[in-house]
Image (cartoon, rainbow, N blue to C red; front, side, top):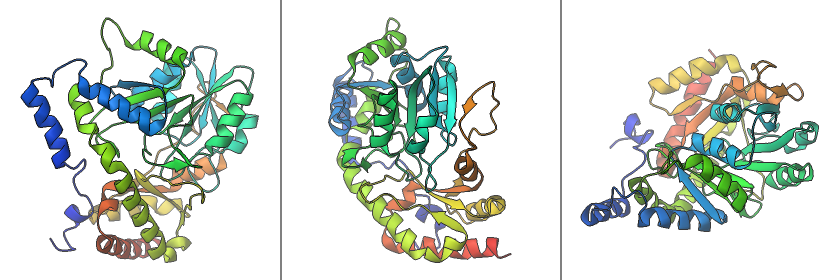
Length: 367
């Protein structure tokens, strides 16, 4: 393969099939246990998740999106309650709050990232605010120590959305280990992938019981299959190594793309954190150039795409807004994201990618 074979270099297949994953699947076929509603793989998966994310209870389910709704139901959130989240976040989180009958409360994101600004939380709480959703996005990790302290001081609960960041570390603890409830996604593009699926994790037995009451209707209404559990198990042994490679490749990109800082902000993580990169994010200083930039990248098979649209335009009938959401508005307009599979390629490929990005950025921004 040459460095001009962009589609294979910059968009390698994900998730990759490994001998370990193949062995797990063949074992299920030989034992004829692949169709079990509840088999040994499901329990091994729960054990891995408990060990990785430091929660006592794990409830696998059918998607990361559903895991947020199940978590909210487990937390006892419903009509008449408010739930705080960032004005820039995954759309499903806003919808999950609405699905349980509660009202979203929007606060701004950090000036240098995509995670909610924990220092804005104080102004967000009212007498009916029951919970905060803290999402880790695009290489940004929320300040969970402050989020948890402030939320608990106001009598609320923290839902930590770690769907994009398995392997990340925040102030010495795993991302996903901080929330009263934490959620994961195992979607086809995720860092831990089963094609579909998710999980809710908590150490609070009352939260677990409430979500089980909703999710178990004679059997599991929103299950993760034994096959999905099987393909996830080997990925835990690969997670730390892959995490380190992705971090090194992002550091290489930051160094080799320093001259693009005139066009885009590259967020630098806090020193005590070790972010995971499902998507590596940049925020364009001139958002009007985003569409031609993304179109040009995609024609060149460079896996750069736009970020989320944010919730700033949602009406006051659907949510309450705290402040002017300046940074969230900027992120919604200017975010571009590099998809993670390329970050496992070798340093030579990353240098070639950086070279092409420099050419594309200059062509688009200096046209």
